[in-house]
Image (spheres, rainbow, N blue to C red):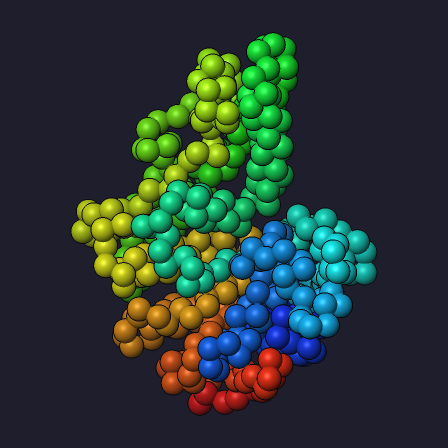
Amino acid sequence: MPGLAVTFLLLSHFRSHRRTEIAFDGRPVAIFGPNGAGKTNILEAVSLLSPGRGLRRATPDEIARRPEALGWKLRAELRSLHQVHEVETFAEPGASRAVTIDGKAAAQAALGRIARMLWLVPAMDRLWIEGAEGRRRFLDRMTLSFEPSHAEAVLAYEKAMRERNRLLRDEVRDAGWYAALEVQMAEAGAAIQANRAAAVARVTAAQAGAETAFPVADLTILGPEGDDFPNGASALSEAYSAVRSRDMAAGRTLIGPHRADLGAVYAAKGMPAAQASTGEQKALLISLILANARALAEDFGAPPILLLDEVAAHLDAGRRAALYDELCALGAQAFLTGTGAELFETLGARAQAFEVTDDSGLSTVRERDLS
């Protein structure tokens, strides 16, 4: 049995689920049903057992079931290595979400210390051909999976940068106003850069050291438009000071880790991921998620929980079966969604299966047998 798994989940007034209770045994979980039935809502609920806004990046009020709008609540039992934790997260109308672990109030960052989680959702299928923001978010989720404190560095950097940008827009020219903020940005920025570089190195090593049915991606961290940018606290601090006039003309900070991009090359073909076919781009993403999971299994002591929404899209039957074999060999609790049970036939008794149906906007979940 895996050392990290959700063993019980309660959704209360969570999107289309008025009250849903599900027990899990640690095997992969296949969730099937028609579009709009509420399958992804279950994955989103599990994703909120980690820090942040979950796989949909929704605000707390967007999650609450309509039309009641009473707020929402999740309760879960989480087996993490040799311990079992009771986790609750909830939000009242108009309030931010709160977290308790084992009955005590906790910061969201504490969730990252008891569990690691990765996800792949359909919106990420265009990752390599859209703007840098999505790739930067993907890079930071990868980084956060290895280093939970990465979120604190990102928040510190963004807070200082907002203040600096305000000074720039107001055309404040007194260097004294900028100096302290730029030191804060440089220190937090250097931590961000180091964390990202370490994460890319770990995933790259995990790809190279595995036999897999999925292609290898060569990853690089790039500056804006592919340019190099200052690296390290001293270099960043000096650079922020040197470009104040240019930044003032733009009204914002133009250099630093907030402008980074994640480059990827389909190694076997030597082509940028953006030029690969739709199926190849999907396979590259899956390869990175699996490599990330293998590396985390070594670092954390157990493979992460994986959330793979509509993962069968763009995969032929052979590669789909290969994915399931890799997930089972990894020993991860993976939550997978699809429109029909036939998509998960090759999992058979290796997985639990649940059918989700919709009745006038109310989701119902029933356990089924794939074997």
